[in-house]
Length: 365
Image (cartoon, rainbow, N blue to C red; front, side, top):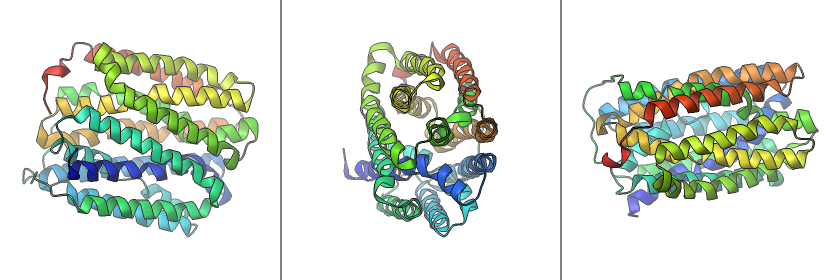
């Protein structure tokens, strides 16, 4: 791995610290600021809409004029939003997610690496290790101070990107064309809706179901991140044995079964175990999916295609927390899991139909 690969991998990876911490603390912090569960869900939805929509615009502009500057701007906005959260301004959370930053870094990485699957798997694994660190922060810091850490991480990520020399200069014109291949990735919209219903609210579900605190949940989310970090590294090997598409489908099917089982868990310990294993299985194929997008799209559309597919996922995902928050607020802690499992099943079946004959091995990045 060369120096610039290492910088890009590090820039993406450390962002996991904020993700790992905020998965636990944001829903609880927002309720501490006086928002009821339904409004927490609405705010999480707004965050997804802002980050995905503006991230797509950033990525189209980046394909036209270069990715580095827009990746840096996205980190700067995140840093400011986290600082405002520390100042007890809850609605700043809507602006805290990196606006297309992940897709921009992936596109930059594609021009620097000779093995995109391994680099993307390494990014995912290190990001998850970083998120493990983030998940442990509630053990050491009050919730409010964690947002200062988040802001510092975003600034550090910006600094690492600033050291990159970008060869890609852009097409010189703003252009986006929807292709058949992008349309096939519309399965991510179904996945996004399902994920949005329960995943952003899992810490709230644990709290409502078992009356556990953020401090008690912290080791569980940390263990979940550690387990996922290890399984993500195995994803390229699994893909080499059964193919990228089959690897994604098989891990999704196993995760869906566990998702149906999860709400029937009789204790916090059992629920935590199911949660950890399900999370690892459902997400270990993420670097494979990112690699598929980079392989199937031309260089001058990689950032915009990645962000558009993220947008397809994120807009339905934005509706999810409102649905989940409403059902949880009504005391229904089972139906959201069943709805999500049904949506995941439909998306996985369609994904297999669309891509089962894709010849990914012949496409070079």
